[in-house]
Length: 603
Image 1 (cartoon, rainbow, N blue to C red):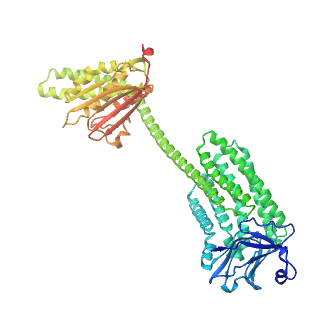
Image 2: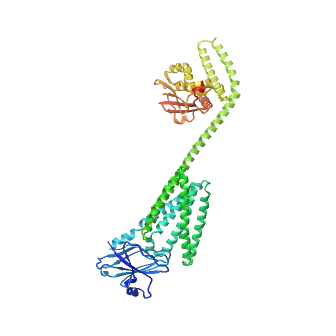
């Protein structure tokens, strides 16, 4: 592949056309060497001629490729024959030319006639010679990246719009904004490519108008997304600026339609409004976005950090594009900004997905809390019923039971052995009924009286005389590791009742085919006292763990669940918590946590 080292330009169009152009003396032509910036078009000039001298030797199947021609109407002549032309009847002036040349064209001159109603008029790239097939590949693949990116964004927008049908109103707005942004970016990428205008010139006006509309939608949509994500009512200026952008974009679309209907009679007015004024608005928008992001990032807003990363990528790519543009005196085609737009779009999608994940987590937490409070409400209703029953029935039932027990003992002492066994069973059942009534009475008075500072080690030591023989009787043993100096606040008798209930449950859970073991230990952690009671009994199924402490629920055959219910009530009254952990046929562990009382205060 070869590069033409030099070509010449002449401003204006002589009346005689190409015949007169060929006769113009060389001093009227401006020589432009390869790599030099293209000369600026003089004011009021609308046409120009470019002369390119071909080398003497041209191989077979060669072609000439000019990547960047700034003109609306272009004709290429070789030997007075038009070998290539393009005519844009719309405000777009970036063209790309590829045409074949033969070996007979050696040392001939190629003339390009350029016409435009816009500001630029010249060649802004190298003029290359090479095999036509290789040049065609470059010609076709030059903008393939833009088209692929554009179609990808359009596909994403279509999928998101279809998926939005299944979203609620709150989620739909943010989702729709991202869809509009994706749609706008896709259209901008595709319609920015000169390939579309060069190969589908009949639709060029549609492409040009689509590019403008996509840009007009993108800018207010971006501000609206920022308003949805970051504005919590404090930044009213974001809302007002977004409304201004929407109104101005609507005005630009209306002005564009009027200009098209008038066959570009208002092109200068439209250009001023859609380029000059819009550029100022974009600069103001970016400054406001940067200021808002800096403020939110300093406050630790993670979404602002994500957005700032994407926006910084866009800004840096834009700065590099502008630097290259001015360094080459305008002989540069912007392309880095596309990667910045992609980075910004990815950041917006990440923020949206993060918001959806957070909302989903909030919904899950809300559902769990609702289920918990519903369970607590049901439990409270059960407890209220039991409390009312306990207050009204327990005292009335206990007295007849005691009288009946006394008479049974008296009769048992005067009967034979067989009847005495019956009497013993009847008395045991009456005692069990009395125990249930006692639990009812304990529940009917959940408040604690006679509060004192309790030494956990001393309280456990005092009940060892009761629980150790009971464990031995059931073929088990108890080990206790509780350091002194652990103090909690509560009622002595109630606290002992809690410990006895829990340890008694562990003893009753001993498995028949092994030695039962109960390990009790306590410690201090983060201003709280933790008490653990762990056994190697039968364990509790996971489905039943959540129901422990409910009235009338028990894992025992003859249990009522009132013992654990009272235990939960006492622990809660002492401002503590209780938790059960269990593995079936392996172990069960009870963990109680109480606020710590300092030893000095306890003394």
